[in-house]
Image 1 (tube, one colour):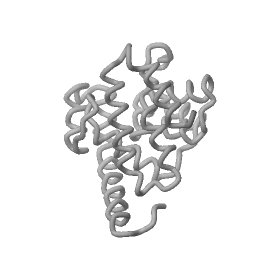
Image 2 (cartoon, rainbow, N blue to C red):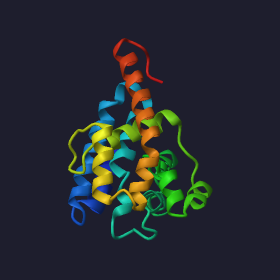
Image 3 (cartoon, rainbow, N blue to C red):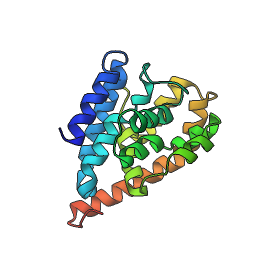
Image 4 (cartoon, rainbow, N blue to C red):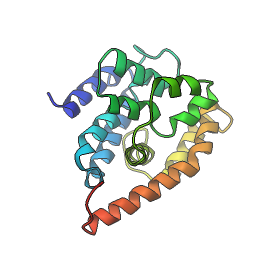
Length: 189
């Protein structure tokens, strides 16, 4: 079984029944990651696997800290022996370092996991931040607004996502530039 096929199976087993909306979102994020394959080259499969797994830390069976990037990355590393690069993408997805800081977990995250290459982090940010909670396509602005509305502006998630907004918009611009270059015939990185 290939990495991507395995990742879909694991994510489904952890999210589909207890958290069907989170599973739908994860499928949508993976679909957006596939859309970005022209700029990912040989890392396209790696990113799609990380995209479908990015929220496994919400699974009630493994949630321990309440910080899903850390819980998911630990599970993937310790229980599943997943490719280190997938684990790092999950650990740091969508500006997770800023949320870790809000939760008092930044040191733990940084001590346990190294960040992945910035271009892949950008691609995962864009995949996540252009996918609705139900798996549909949206814009980064609409997604950020939805997150603030759902959690509240004065919550940990609300504060973190507002702090992360400039980096999310910058990642979207970088990815869009790379996609434009790729469609004009440039080679993927």
